[in-house]
Image 1 (cartoon, rainbow, N blue to C red):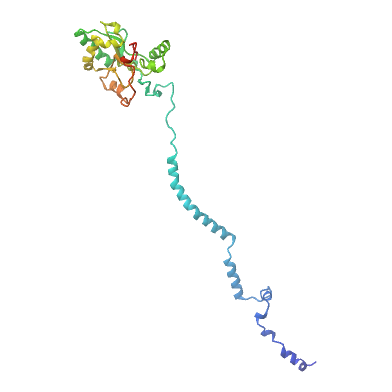
Image 2: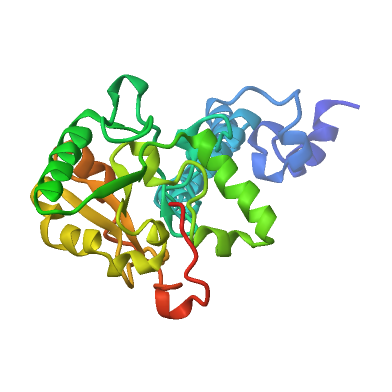
Length: 294
């Protein structure tokens, strides 16, 4: 067959070179055998860039969590001081020690705590049988005795300084012998460590002309007591437990204390103004008028 016989068929077939790429199936156009196209390559790279990888996802999540935690952190700073303020502060009070007198409470059964006077500050009274007082108190007491004698009054000395050991016997042994409870005993005798006699400033006074009134309420009827009421203050002595005293201690007209210097004044008056105990066991309340040993 010559070319002339094929000419009609050849004319009817489209030119292969003139075929549009639009007429080629997609799978064929995008296959690995497809020729390289710069436009197509750029589109593929752009599409890949728009898809985030794992690192970018984790970074975004981390930034999001940080942004959420910041308000919570600021809120914590506001709440924590208040929470700390609401918590009770730990106690810093020292535990009481039975071996240390400073651990004793300031008050017990209506009596104030007093330290025992140093032995070096105590002297013997010339008019007493082995009775001790602090030097300043002893000097003024001796002067008061001489002034009373000049007025015809004979003051006797019943008790002066008393150690805590002596007071221990006086309080507990007598309490047991009389069958008293602690409050009853404390109304007429201070517990050990709480007696004014420990200070070396306190003294029990009697009337030599009326010894039966010693340590009794009836002492207030003696000439010695009447003289003390008028003159004791000139020698810096005062009654420790007058009638209806705020300490609630039994009335003791024979018990006097020296307050003639700053040390003695501080001993008896520091932190005492807040005592609000109800007075008790005044002479009118007592049926025995028995002695007290404060």
